[in-house]
Length: 547
Image 1 (cartoon, rainbow, N blue to C red):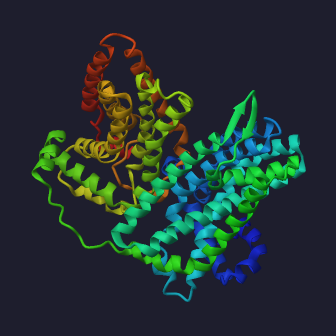
Image 2: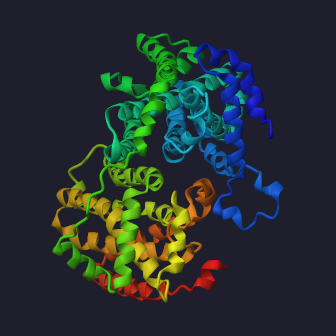
């Protein structure tokens, strides 16, 4: 088995793990197996290009980090913009936290909450604390790769411009932020595992992930609004709530060290930036055996409940699905989206972002004057809710129970059309429609009933967009591939390309509002386009799927 360089580096901290009661040698073996298995997981986008075993052993997550290198280039202006380190480095660390935290929620929560290795490790003489710590270190290894990809170039630029001291303090702050993110995320999961169980626990975990996503976006806005811009200078007006904006903790110590500004507020922020990350990791290490014990609650599925559909629901289903086969796959896809934990772990955070992003753009556009908001065309920001559609369309082919996909072959269906159309309709009505209705209700309150035709057009465009995404993306039977093959970063380029359609829809919508009755003409055109595309998009044969 391969002896990874990351493990050789980890060997230098063996004493630290032993001090916390972790069996380091066992933990190292567990990590070695996990890293080896990670290298054998080939994301779907690369699966057709794998030609030999050597290629299969390449870790595809490492290969996909290039996109974070590109994101890191956007951080360079913050290390070059001046010498107000509290402002510029708070933004730097805030953006860094945004990328790392979203990756933590979307990609690594399933690692922390993984219960699949229990049957192998628990019958063996392996301490629960060792197992739980190995999970945290497993996540930390990959977050360190992500961190290096994201900040290496900006920090080198900062080293050249601001010197060695700036470089060293920035590295220390970034390490503390990573520890804080890992520790706080694990403690949140520990808390909900402690007090909830069964199906309710799984739902709460998904709601917490949505909440974390919303907190990241709202926290970033609060960070921006903590500073005032007066005559091209930046000043901080202290407020009590700023103590909860932890990127400012690390910006404060940069201000103290680089500019020698030793204010009481900066000292408080610096103390929090050092103590809270270390304290969160210490608490988690102390109680991680409790975390592992409570993970068994995720294996409890609760009592099965008969899903008796009301006549109204059956009538609605018959209205949107025109055949028995399509209705059957609509119900099947709805059940998978509702009960597939791995699917929800990746999708639900995106739903949280799609709810809050339109309001963030409205707030940024109307910082000082909200009186003109109700008569403006800012309701078009609802188009930002469409950006989740490509990602979820890609995820629809993945499942933790993908081995059950043989059922598609034995079902007496002559065409694949009802499978795809029923699944897409289930996604639209079960996942996107609740987000859309929530946003629409708020927008009607803010902008008035006048925007109702516009909101109807947005929903029609969302349906058109879903069909376009299906037509462009690689075809695969829904829920038929392993969720372990999903790699968010490897799909980044195609998702970005598909997002250009959202800009196109919003642009045409804006132009239609410039003409009398233009919005109603656009409404008719959208209905015709949706009907035409829907009729043609799902005529897929098995030969195209197997190609």
